Structures are given as structure tokens and as C-alpha cells.
Image 1: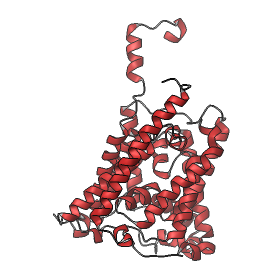
Image 2: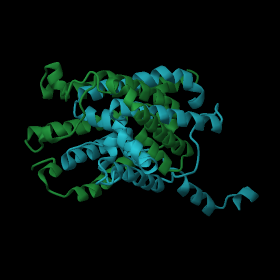
Image 3: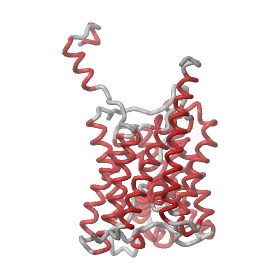
Image 4: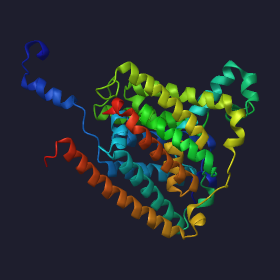
Length: 201
Length: 189
């Protein structure tokens, strides 16, 4: 197997748009199943009452990470042909903080708001208009912040290289961390449920 | 009829039950499903998922339509609209996000969860909730551009590929949201 298929010219750029649409359907379907079209479910992550966001996100990351790891190990997937962004540490840290604040203020992230709007949520539609406005403002002031945007460029940084550990070891540590986070989430949810019911078990 | 008489016939009661929204699925199974979709994107396309990028293409196209000169002179929009030889909306992420709308709608319809409503806590008015939705969306759009992606493009995609910047980003998203949660509690709890 030679993957990524697209990079080995197994289909045309036009056909890749059909694949994009199909993958998007899978993505949207999964988000809705998880309850991510509902801002109250997403927000409850930040009040420790329902840890679905963490559970879905980390089980998705672990699944895809393990898949990539084994495909690479079997020689099926050439990781150097899989696109990912350069690390620009400071802008990404600041952007992440702004995004986190926006998450709890607005109730969604861009992907989940699409599902929310598609399932009839007015707040999701308004949120999307906000996203468009935010991107517009960013684009307009971009010449002013261009220096900051391109600052602290570290190139393409693969965590195993950065930490000086093997790929397999990092994968193992991430799985361990995820399992720990799941256990903590289950425990936390039980605690919060007891607290909510007035201390009665 | 039942709302007038206050009496449910057996048939109506069954009907009610059928159209009740179904509970959301097991989060771990959903996560595995989502992970497999992401893995498919890596294997088939050599790239991950995304969301905010599609809206950048949309905004850049809008600016180009209204003020073509301005779009061509702006270094950020220029990257999305290109030299004019291709349609900026004929883009991988734009089609993927169209799919997200459709996939979400299909899942919602199957589970009877499609309904016109506003999601909010009891202690906030609809108007204020919508104002916050707009502000939050604005912050998210701006932050995602600065971070080179949102929860999909950075946290999920870069997370699975063990990209340093994506992991730093993901930790900061949780940090920002938890730091702000207390001030937003009236909106949600």
C-alpha cells in the first residue's frame, strides 16, 4: 500500500473534492452523534459536569495517532507526505488562549458550529457570522501583525524529535495520558453528580 | 388534538415517543469513529480535517468580490484568492465543511434532534446569548487565524500527528476556556 493515495496520484484534484465532501459528512455525523451540535453540552466541559469534549477529542486523537503509527511502522504510509503546519510557538499559544476564551463565550468551535447551524440552532448561525467577522478583522489588520504572526518559527516540529524520544515511546505516553484523563473525567463526573444531588448518593 | 383535550390516545403517545430526540451516543465510540474519519483523511489525502480554513476562503472571496484591488493588496487574503486563475471556493476545506453541514444534518434527522432553538442556560436572555455567540465566534475566528487552525485543524489533526505547535495550542485552548468559565457561568449554568 502506498499512502497517502492522493500524493501517489491515484486520483485527480477534482475527485479529491468529492472525497473532501464524503470525509466532511463523516466528520459532521460524528460531531452530531457526540452531542457537539449543542452548545450546552460543549460548555459543560468547562464546568466539569459533562466531560464529553475531552472524551471524544482524546479518543479520536488516540485512534488516529495509533492508526498513523502502525501504518508508518508497516511501511504503508509515508509520514513526510502528510501535511501539517509549522510550529510558530508564541502566536499559536496566544491564538489558543483567544480561541479558548471564544469557546466558552460563544459555546462552539468553528466545526461544531456548522453542525449546530445545520441542526437548527440559531446561536450556531450567529456564532458562524461571528467567525466570519473575526476572520475579516484578522485579514484587515494582518499587515500590522504580520511580524508577530511569523515570529518564533520552529519549522515542522515532530514531538518525538523535539523531546528526543522514540515515536513509539511518545505514542505510548499519549495513550497513557489519555487513559488517565478518561479515568479522571469519569471520577469527576460522578463527584459533580453527587454534589448536584445535594450530597446524596 | 391532545393538547386541547389533555388526553393522549395510545397511538399519540407512541407517536410522541418516536419523535422524541434520542440520547447522544457513547463519547468513546464517537471518538473512535471520529478518529477513523481523521485517519481516512491522512491515508487518502495526506492531510487532516479542518473548519476555520474554509471560512477564510469564504471571507477572502467576499472581499475579492466587493473590492478586488483591496484583496489583491492584502497579503493575507491574497494567499486565499490566488492570482485569479482559479476559483478560491473550489477548495478542499470548503467541500469538506459543506460535508460537515450535511453529515450533521443527516445524523440530527436520524435522531430527531433537528429543531429551531437557541442553546443557553436558564439565567440568560436569548438576546444576550446571541450577542455572546457572535463575540465568541469573532474571538474564535481571530484566534484560529493566529494559531493557524482551530480545534479541527490544530488540536485533532496536529494532535494525532504529534505536532509540537498543535499540542501547545490544545493546552492553551483548555487553559483559556477554564480561565474564562467562571465569568461566563450565567450563560451556561
